Amino acid sequence: MNASSNIISSVHHLKIACEHWEDFIRSHPSTKGAMLFTGYKKRAEWIVNDLITHPLLPQSVRDGIKAEWSSDCFTVDAIAEKAALLNPAQRENIESVIDCMLKGETLKIEQL
Image (cartoon, rainbow, N blue to C red; front, side, top):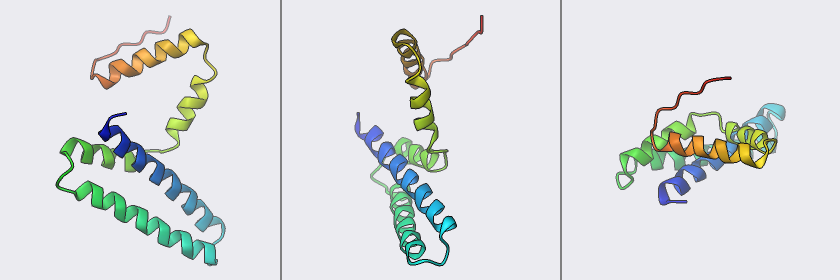
């Protein structure tokens, strides 16, 4: 992983933690746990906001952080679960498709 990927990955995991805290807060309102997790969620949001506005990070990284923070963080796990059901050759094909997408190549998928 390169540095940008590590930063985006850390934001991804913060987002997952926030989603779990929000679920706890909704399920157990007005409890000490809800108050605790509300504070943790605010701290995580502060970290992300600090990263987004940090002048030493390249704009592409800040844009990636914004995109990751506003995305559905559970999609990555869903993709991994589905990929595990593929045979090894199919997983290699999917990895090649992802590599092409990361390079910015245009893909055309035809269903046969």
